[in-house]
Amino acid sequence: MKPPSSPVTALDLPPLDPLPEKTAAYFELCQEKLGLVPNVLWAYAFDDEKLKTFTALYNDLMLGESGLSKLEREMIAVVVSSINRCHYCLVAHGAAVRELSGDPALGDALVANYRAADLDARRRAMLDFAAQMTAESHSIEEADRAALRSAGFSDRDIWDIIATAAFFAMTNRVASASAMRPNPEYNAQGR
View 1 (tube, helix red, strand yellow):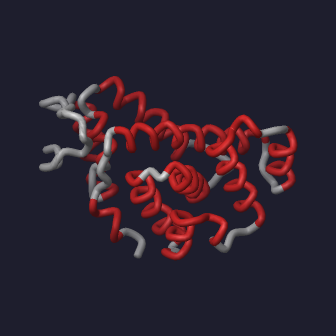
View 2 (cartoon, rainbow, N blue to C red):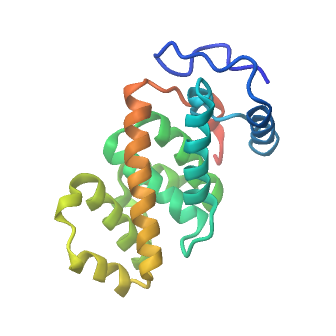
View 3 (cartoon, helix red, strand yellow):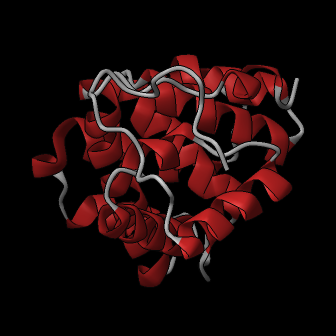
């Protein structure tokens, strides 16, 4: 598996050469299932322990068992990334929302302003909470968690909303500060 021909960040951190066997196998699996190796993985590939830590948390939050659907978790990623203006995550996760929902307009609305999207009350409450957490987590009170419960979320679901929003707040900052470049393939996905 060869790394991209152009740098994926503004930092001079080339991937390990050769990639460790398990990492190379994981990248091959990504290529097979997604049609690409996300540049975020290449960005972390200079340090196999950091890559493993990142992918373990990502896979648990985004693919693990949850009362939130994969689409809902991707919607949270887009709303958090929109507030943080993270180019990489907006392009990558906007594509995921388009593909999972089958609705390019939903993906574009979430990127621009989730409040313009046609959402049911449950998802609106989820995204309002994720937006509040991103912009001013210090203002969250029991009434905000109660609003999620009233919208049908369990406390475990609320934990997953919190953890997903927090993860993307962190990754947005890493991606933006390192000038991480999204894979060009994302732009056409789900359109």
